[in-house]
Amino acid sequence: MVELKTDTSIDAMYEAGQVVARALTAAREAAAVGVSLLDLDEVAHGVLREAGATSPFLGYRPSFAPTPFPAVLCVSVNDAIVHGIPGRYRLRDGDLVSIDFGAELGGWVGDSALSFVVGTPRPADLRLIETAERALAAGIGAAVVGNRIGDIAHAIGTVCRGAGYGIPDGFGGHGIGRRMHEDPGVPNEGRPGRGMRLRHGMVLAIEPMVIAGGTDGFHAAPDGWTLKTDDGSRAAHAEHTVAITESGPRILTAR
Image 1: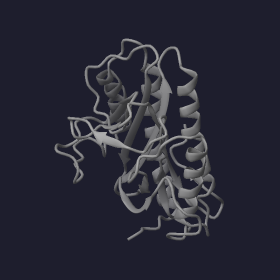
Image 2 (image 1 turned 180 degrees about the vertical axis):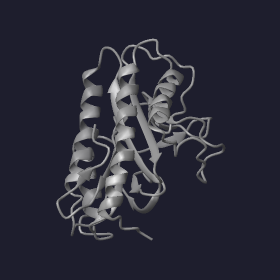
Image 3 (image 1 turned 90 degrees about the horizontal axis):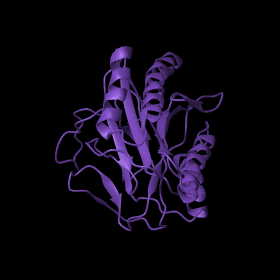
Image 4 (image 1 turned 120 degrees about the horizontal axis):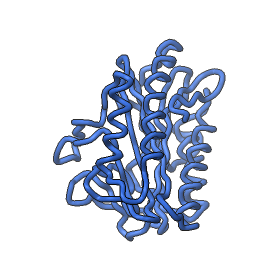
């Protein structure tokens, strides 16, 4: 069932979304050669504490996970697509990093992600990140009243496939509100004009993921959480929480 949020609820979700935006900005600013992934998690955790917010990631255990997630920040490096667990690994020059973060404030949740390069970037990595961001913008642009979920999926997929990149099958965006994952699912590829019609008050986490090698295959790392590309190529991830309104899409996690 899809819950339509009131305008007041969307305003409250914006407040949660701004905690997410601050945490991602702080973690990105802290990311440098020699900094550990655990350090980045602690930076994000500090933003939560300062805001009086809690983490929907910490302790989360979906059906596929062997253990509860042990951190507040997902940090996925190089060939890791999503769900990377922060550990003692220290960032190296040229690492491609994707960070994903959620916050719960006042009973409402925000969720967002971004990708960046530490130190000296490879042009190919910058193109990959730019494509993920452009696909996100295309998906948000299609998130208007009267369109359908398939229009968002088609907009994202057109950008990703047009750039020659792969899309991990079965992973995409989702509804969000009182819980981090709500109906409906938002695929990263699909046919326009199909699926649920978009209405004022729907709130979606739209999140394209792209694989540089052009193939779609992925597998879980031994930790059971981190998803890695089968071909060993790099991946990028971008995400915003977006409210569907009569005035157009409202990005609740805008940085």
